[in-house]
Amino acid sequence: TQLLEQSPQFLSIQEGENLTVYCNSSSVFSSLQWYRQEPGEGPVLLVTVVTGGEVKKLKRLTFQFGDARKDSSLHITAAQPGDTGLYLCAGVAGTASKLTFGTGTRLQVTL
Amino acid sequence: KAGVTQTPRYLIKTRGQQVTLSCSPISGHRSVSWYQQTPGQGLQFLFEYFSETQRNKGNFPGRFSGRQFSNSRSEMNVSTLELGDSALYLCASSFDPNYNEQFFGPGTRLTVL
Image 1 (cartoon, each protein chain N blue to C red):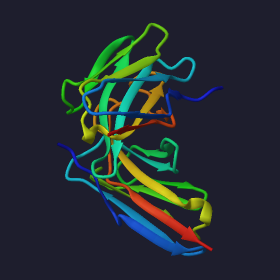
Image 2 (cartoon, rainbow over the protein chains, first blue to last red):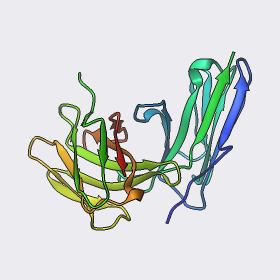
Image 3 (tube, one colour):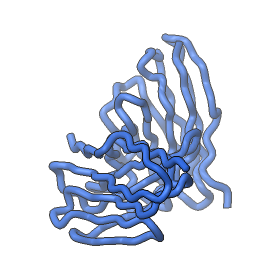
């Protein structure tokens, strides 16, 4: 069974702070995705990283895929209250329609 | 373009009953996947359908089943409900199984009493 462990599980920070969320596995994935889920809604795809060592930036969010394609990180610069939510990483090992989700990181950003 | 719709949004059942959940994918999408989300186990893959055929199945008992219709709409059924089946059931659609982006619906919140 492929497992994706995320850390930290919970993060409560103030607006303007920086943070990093980690997603680690002992398995290799062909690609890795990051989602954000808000209460009462389904997860929304933020990014897909495919190549080992790849770095993608989405405004204040920076995503990195590990060289060995077993781990990934999400860094948020100058967090805002709108960043509050559950962040999920998801590994793709075969078909992109069968995702292995991480354990999740719940982020709360307060004023 | 309408997103993925799931019905009903909320459902309360008692142990031993059965339940059917429905998912309508985005127009033009032919692949539908189902996931179960619980506080303890997180998001777990249930099954995936493409062109009315189940392509993949997760590690769930046979009480969990599904199907896909010719218009790509999908249903999942859970028989002989147990308390542990209480969860948010999410449906995701994509153009085809190899397309890298899935779009999730809002989910059906099932409570088993």
